Amino acid sequence: MEMRTLQAFVEVVRQGGFTRAAKTLISTQPTVSKAVKQLEEELELQLLDRVGHNCVLTDAGKIVYRRALTILAESEDLKAEIEELRCIMGGTFRLGFPPIGSNTLFARWFMTYRKLYPKVDLQLVEYGSKRLEELVLAGELDIAAALLPVNELLEFHELRREPIDMLISVDHALAQCDRLTFAELAEVPFVLYAEGWALNPIILGACRKNGFTPKVAAYSSQIDFLVELAALKLGACFLPRMIALQRPHALTRRIPIDQPVIHWHMGLVWRRGGYLPPPAKAWLDLAEQFQISAT
Image (cartoon, rainbow, N blue to C red; front, side, top):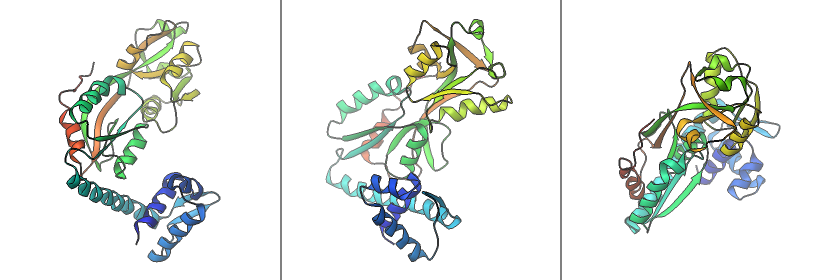
C-alpha cells in the first residue's frame, strides 16, 4: 500500500470527485483514478460508489478513509520529527485561523510569537472552523483556532466563550426590544454565513429548538457585508457580542437573544496524541499570556 494511493483516495473523498481531486493534487484525472483503482484492487474491496460525477464512500471506504487519515498524518509527523533534528526552534509551524474574531484574539499573540521566534517558517491559513478541524485531523495543520466542541480526536485549549447577539435594522418593529427569544424570530428573514461555517448550525439549532426553520435571505463569508444587509432591512444577522461591538452601525440595533442563549465558544485545537513540533508547543506556551476573558 503506497502513500500516493492513500493520498489520492483521501483527496477524492474530500473534494467529492476525481476531477477536483486532480486539481488539488496538481495531477490528472486519469492518474488519480488509476491510483484509487489500484488501492481498491490491492484491498479487493470497492471503496467508492461512483454516482454520476460524484463519489460516495462504501462501508469499506469509510473504514479505509478513517485509517488513511491517520496513516497520512503519522507520515507528516515522521517528516516533522526529522526536520526538528535539523533545526531546533526553526522549522515550520502550520497554523489555522477562522475569519471571525482572529484580529481580537490573535493579532498581538501573533506579533509576539514572531518577535520571539523569527526563524520559524510560520504558515498561516484561514478557513471556517469545520474545515480547520479537518486539516488538523489530516495532519496538514499543527494547531488551529476553532469553535468548541470539536471532534473527540482533537485536544483543545479554551480561549473564549462569547454570547451571540442579533443585529437588525433600526427600522424593524423588533428593534425596540431590549431582549428577544428565538421564538419571536420565526417570521424574521436571516442573513447567514457561507456554507461550512460552524456558526450556522448553532443558529439553526436554536431555531429548531423553538419549532421553526428560518427563511434565509442571503449567505456570505464577509461579516461587514452581512451587517450591511441587516442595516438595509434584508434580514437579521448574528455576531459574537465582542465582534458586534466592534462594528457599530448607525442603521442597526444589537439585541441579545434568549431561549436558548447561544455562544461563540472558541479554542485552540490539535490532534490528540499527535506530534506537536517545538514551534507549535511554543505557540501554546503563550496561550496563558494572551488569554481573553468572555464578556
